[in-house]
Structure formats: structure tokens, C-alpha cells
Figure (cartoon, rainbow, N blue to C red):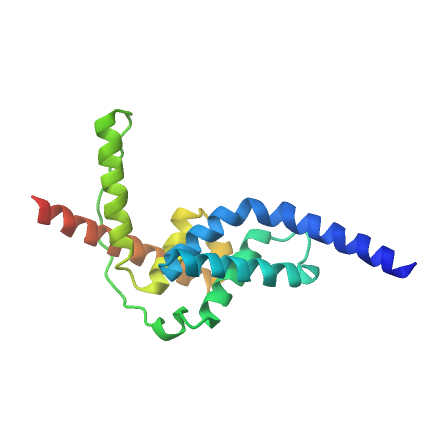
Length: 184
């Protein structure tokens, strides 16, 4: 019976999709929260992304970068949504600043409190970034994607990715330094 072989093939594709997609759920959700700035909208965005990705999974080329493929679907879904970046594509070119970043190597209640405070400051500073810079910073520094994969996801040249990452880091550094100076 031909319908039974179609069902088995469909089950195999669903299993393969789950195996590749489910481990990426937290990362996709994290980026979606940053993009939408709303947990309910992020949940909807990730759900729509999974739906579109599963529907188009037959067209995915096995052996290629699934993470870049599904993040591209997430981004495109966001861009075409009513809350997407389409209306906010202006990127302001900022000069790069140099600065030092410090890390705390010991784990004490005080250091954990400082780290939580720092996380809140970084989150607040990231929210000030223009959408195109925030997007590239999330993919590079939060999701630890390679520049070439980010270029695929965002459909921009790798040089543009590198430039945006540098500008985003510089802008973030300036905001954090201004916040620090305001506390002194």
C-alpha cells in the first residue's frame, strides 16, 4: 500500500527534524525574546518558525548547517511579522571605541550579586542598540554562531557581519561605560 510508505517516510522526516530542531529551541526562543521584546510574541514567533521549518524540512539539504537554516527562518518570519524589523532597518554607523572587559573568577555571594547586576546592565544596554546591531550581536556573542553562518542567516556579506559586530560591541561598551560613570 503506497500510503503506508508515505507515512513511514513522513515519520522519519519528523524524527530527523525533531533531532535537529529541539536542541535549538532555547537558543531560538532567546533570540526571539530579544527581537520581539515580549515573551508571548517570542513564543508565537518560535512556534511559527518551527511550523515553517517542519513544513519546509523536505527542502533542507542534509549535511548543511541546520542551525543557520532555522535561524534564517526565525529571522525571516520576524521580518515579515507586523512587529518585525522591516520598519526599523536604519543602521547608524558609530565609531569603534576600545575598552577592557573584566570578568570575576571567584564564586561568592557577593560576586554572584555583582554578576546579576552586570547582567541587568548588559541587558539594558543591549536594548538600546538599533535592531540590526542587536540582531548580529545576539547571533555572534549570545548564540556563538560563526560569522559565515550569521552572513547566511542575515543574508549579508561576511564583511558586513564583522563590521556590525564591531559597531555593536563598541556601542554596547559606550553605553555600559556611560552607565558606570553615572554611578560614580
